[in-house]
Length: 408
Image 1 (cartoon, rainbow, N blue to C red):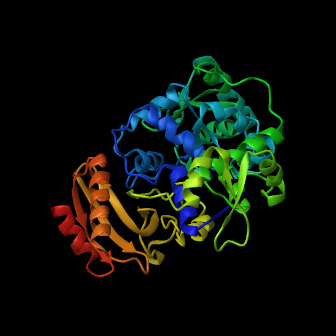
Image 2 (image 1 turned 90 degrees about the vertical axis):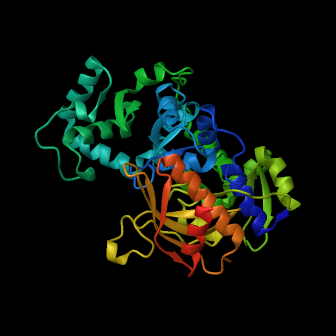
Image 3 (image 1 turned 120 degrees about the horizontal axis):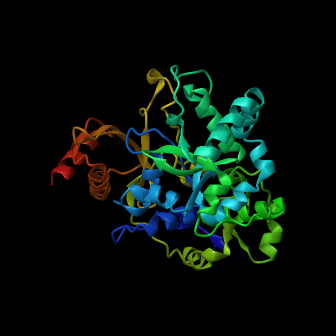
């Protein structure tokens, strides 16, 4: 079976839940459904617009209540762990993350945790003993006169110790309090879940197989070299390794026009694959994406699949930034057509668009302007910042056209 490059793009977006317009109001259960579809939801704390996990869900669900994510964690439907990076994952998948020992051993967070534990074993043991006796605690519950220290983001020692125990698996996040983690013993957290994970450990080959299949399902279509990044698998995934999954029918091997290597589709997407093969997939959604959205977090994949070269510049010195501190990719009807640097001023009630840039070759059509204005209006309203200010745009005339469209 051979697909066009365009059909491969649409198959990916359909699997991610980003192809079609939202046609109904979001429900609380949609949060778990969306995260299960992606396999995970990466956590980042930058809140210039919205914190990344909330923004990723908004891109898929439209206007929803952000507390549903926190409630799903507290209710034991989700867990926090190290996956791609620090992520929310479906609780039913937690055992695979818990038992993925070899991969996590090479992760920077696990290495840091081992180093911190070696340096402060007595203090860390005393900290976890306090949680054992007192119950769930936040970093803020450990008072200290000097709050800053060198190391992980200037965290105080107790925060670093909590995070080290979290990376090592002894502590888990029971819930969040205004986005602050509330830590408890891992066995107490999972015991409160509606369906606690089995205590027996999985063989690592079974864990790897699970993550490979979950990655391909989440990506919709995948080249072998794309797969390992999704769950940070080690070693990299090869075509030879995938051959047995194709032979048993778990994966479907396909060709994509212009690709020299083969691609893979999970059997659960067989219906969408058939639609893609006859060019029957369509994309109608226009939306802003988080810089940590699965569609763009693998920069090499985004470039290969969409021709979209993307770098988040919040870690770049201001004089060297090209697009701004926190530029959001613009997804328009199945294509990544530009980026938008924005800031939500919640107290003042306005949504500041510092700049919006279209990719070279993108036609500035009335449909694009109208869809982008609608996406901006929807995003700003969800933030509680209904007044939108457009400062500049590229190509010339874009900012004015957006202002006119927003005024209608």
